[in-house]
Image 1 (cartoon, rainbow, N blue to C red):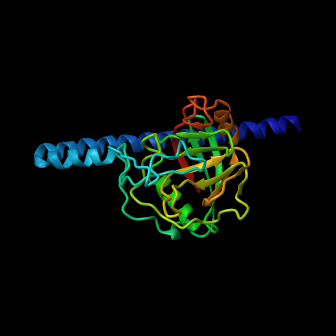
Image 2 (tube, rainbow, N blue to C red):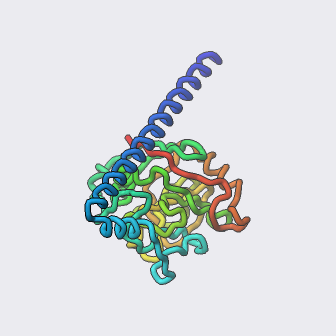
Image 3 (cartoon, rainbow, N blue to C red):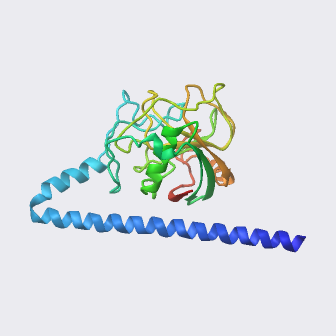
Length: 266
């Protein structure tokens, strides 16, 4: 019996390792393609479109923030706020002009795995209760938008979340759109450990690409779109939380840097 259990564990370990290697290879291919695309654009610029290319690069990387829009307030707010009103992401990622169609969620449950520098996190997505948020995550994940992005915010008092999906690493970016309203928010405002929900600014229509994972049960007033739940690997988030924030405060950048290498969905 012991030998059988050990064999099963070894099979699961090998399966997880193979999946992680596939995700990392996929992320590398995407980054390589982005570099090739960037070189191609630069070549076009030499042919007489240099000014246009420079403008495009600046608009994709030069983020500004304003308190009125909620941009940049994520690390000081008691709520898991997210994106501001920047219209293009950085790092050469695709610019979106429309919110993904909810039909992408297919009205079903999805399973997936997120490979991060802190460890692999398995999860399910609820395309029935939160079709818009789920479709949004599916589109961005399949496009490689999250590859190389960071988990830039950790809260360790009052609410217990790790917030992820920022390309700039400071929470001031967006995929080029915002959407609402909030879907599938718990009536009692309690988000159990392992909940995956959309981060947002003050407005319910300010959801974008950023999301948060609760590593302890958290009461968060205001309503946030719950679209998934962690099924394995929550201990990776717990370990990051145990490391605290860079400045020793209760709300800030995690001392243990976390990046997303790739996301696989089924």
